[in-house]
Amino acid sequence: MERHTYHKLCKARVLSLPGQIFPTNYSGNIKIIEYSDANNVIVEFLRSGARKKTTWWYIKNGEVRDRAMPRFNNYGKPFIIGYGEYKPVTHIEAYTAWTSMIKRCYNPNRLTRNPTYNGCKITEEWFNFQNFARWFMSQVRGNAYQLDKDILCKHNKVYGPQYCCLVPAQINSLFIKCNRSRGKYPLGVSRHKDFEVNPYVAVCNDGNGKSCHLGCFRSQEEAFIAYKLFKESVIKQKAELYKDIIEPRVYDALMKYEVEITD
View 1 (tube, rainbow, N blue to C red):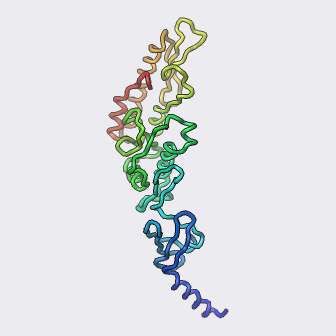
View 2 (tube, rainbow, N blue to C red):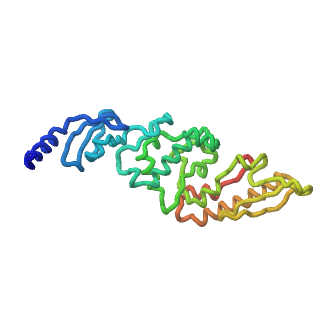
View 3 (cartoon, rainbow, N blue to C red):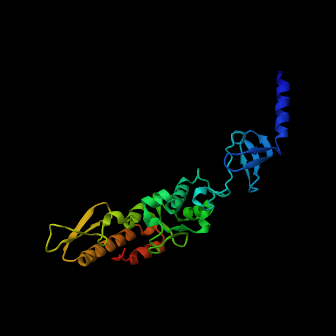
């Protein structure tokens, strides 16, 4: 085929593309609105009416995704990426925190492994990644921040901007509990079978990864009081250490935090 004939055919094909319908693997059919070149194609999703710019490669391979379409459909909630400035590939830390939160609340396998999250839910506002990412980026003041739902509101079961905060990993680790391994005694308390006079032992992490033995006591209540006083002092120390990079409301909550025997 002569070169000029080939180019005529290519041009005719390009001119015929606008208005054509193509299927996608995940987001239903799309219609080509405008074709400038192979790297600049405007398409419209027929289900949602949303438009986006994409490439011919994504179109022909069915890989164009509608950010207005729900994800994690098997969880029964309409979680969407949404259209806006925040994208999973450019805001990886926020996207990771968002997806991890969703899985903690609604993934059956995760709930089986960690039943403490049973009953947890996410506010409708955070079903949209754009809203969550906007909040997340407004909170970050450094690296290695983690999402917490219990510091501001103890025993809270709802993930939302009014209840949650971002804190350094060292602060978040202070509130991680393992109900499976703690047994029947209060937090920080265990019974030593070889001790007859003072059988109850109090142990607490010092906030830096070191386990501190706080003494042996006649009753589990006495042992818990020793644990409580030490743990609350550790929390206050960390609050002072990170005072300049955590929210004032988080600092205040940490300074007032009380460890209870029912925790």
